[in-house]
Length: 136
Image (cartoon, rainbow, N blue to C red; front, side, top):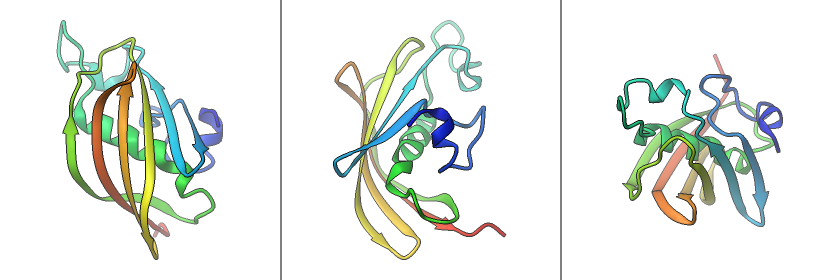
């Protein structure tokens, strides 16, 4: 699904919509984002050597996993990030591919294991959890 279709699942909008496309491949969510270089999170991180912040990579992974919760009602909120490892710097011009698998689901809670790669080189591994809750 393209960016517009992702908006039907996620409440995020520009500039916080950080996935260009996402789809389900077998039991794995796959998402991609191409770092253009003009993103808000690169302003000042770092001048002359722009690098995608690690927390943004985690957010991209979380958003890429959105197809795993398609059909649920509510807003997904992060409840945890565990075993996060950054293994490669991500720069403008890079296209990041994220893969996420659902490892457990209980009630509104979803537990996911995921990775991010650039040119088949791992840049991120993480376990994340979130809850899908009805907005107030």
